[in-house]
Amino acid sequence: MYSIFSSEIVVRPDDIDMNNHVHYTKYLDYLLAARYEQMERDYKMSMEEFIERDLTWVASTAHIEYKRALKLNDIAVVKTQLESFSGAKCRVNFWIEIKATGKPASSGYVDYTLVSIKSGRPARLTDDIIEKYAI
Amino acid sequence: MYSIFSSEIVVRPDDIDMNNHVHYTKYLDYLLAARYEQMERDYKMSMEEFIERDLTWVASTAHIEYKRALKLNDIAVVKTQLESFSGAKCRVNFWIEIKATGKPASSGYVDYTLVSIKSGRPARLTDDIIEKYAI
Amino acid sequence: MYSIFSSEIVVRPDDIDMNNHVHYTKYLDYLLAARYEQMERDYKMSMEEFIERDLTWVASTAHIEYKRALKLNDIAVVKTQLESFSGAKCRVNFWIEIKATGKPASSGYVDYTLVSIKSGRPARLTDDIIEKYAI
Amino acid sequence: MYSIFSSEIVVRPDDIDMNNHVHYTKYLDYLLAARYEQMERDYKMSMEEFIERDLTWVASTAHIEYKRALKLNDIAVVKTQLESFSGAKCRVNFWIEIKATGKPASSGYVDYTLVSIKSGRPARLTDDIIEKYAI
Image (tube, rainbow over the protein chains, first blue to last red):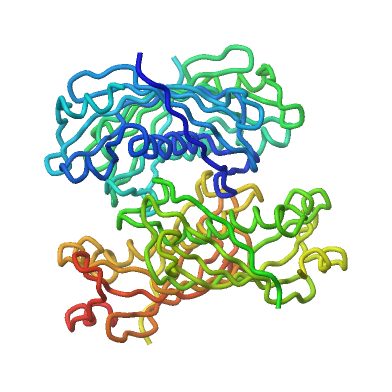
């Protein structure tokens, strides 16, 4: 079982849609912002370090369940946990909570594939990457 | 088996992210734009008509698989098909193709829940709505 | 001369465009987020309180100069200052700085018009609103 | 006097904000989409061709006036016209109309600076670029 890391994302007015709550695709943007922060702060290997090695992460599957609307003035608490690694892929589970109440807003997972920027092809996870992320 | 409807969405520069392709959350925005068009043009009951009845559709689950990147100058062909109705819910399957090549860019499904705008609670699909959408 | 208030906005990955810096329209979204925070925290009359009175603010003019690109991992410091009131309008000057260096990223102004939500027509600023904002 | 070119942009649901009209920053995204189309279709020198020469255009000033709200189901007609060239800069005037009524939604201008992607420094407009764009 890998560690759960947590980031806080402040809802911005431009995230709100005509239904007066955070637009449904923005939850996946909050997840992305949380992962970037956690890659640097918690895993000690930032997205920039991947890019310097000609690598980037692309989503191959995203699955998200919506439980409670995030609204203006809310702070989203985005928790993520690596579930597994395999070849060029890993699965990240996530949970988004409303900070003020601790109630769940959303949960799901994303499968990421490590890709060579130059070739566009999947790149097997190397041991040193797994060592940093398997915490 | 219900009908498959199709809409074309032109990729905009503001949809492109730092990886030089359409940002992963924008695929779900293209789906949304396609559904709005199809609700009015194909099902003959637009989102506005739902809102006039104090109803709106919210996503309760979204599942998306990414197969091929959409890029600047691409036109996305977004095909959708209702799979099932149940209570206040329905499932919509979707496929996004790159117009120039016909190749798949993405596929998945979204579960939508019909909700009363005033109460925020699920609203059972009425017969006249099912009649319009079960085509 | 009215007070200058300051808010910090953390750059998110979905703000970055194909040029690898914050997309040019997002600067105006950072300004909007800063104003919402300052309306509540500094002027003690939040956007919600305007909406409860059937009022909202809409931009009638925006003018922005770009000086230095904001990038991923930057924190934007957004300073704003009311310049003047007149009828249903006010002008807000703004300056966006890069927190790490204190260097200017952008500056400009936005003219806002107070509008009745129901009628859609301009609504003259009342004395109690001016009293709260003329600080 | 240079030519006026025109592009149509279909409003998408994700462009609509909590005020139930197109978000104020999206007008500048519609302008960007129109310019990209016109660079390729009308000026015969697309953004991709600039990038192949290690060049890109960045906005140095944007000025926009809002006259009438664009709404869901609207099509925006975005007209642009080069006003002047100077060194590494050019000014583009724009007008956004609502297609169904022909009424003005917005107008303004953007000053663009041609920049070397590698150095990040302004790049003087060459004669062959001016020849293509001074039409």
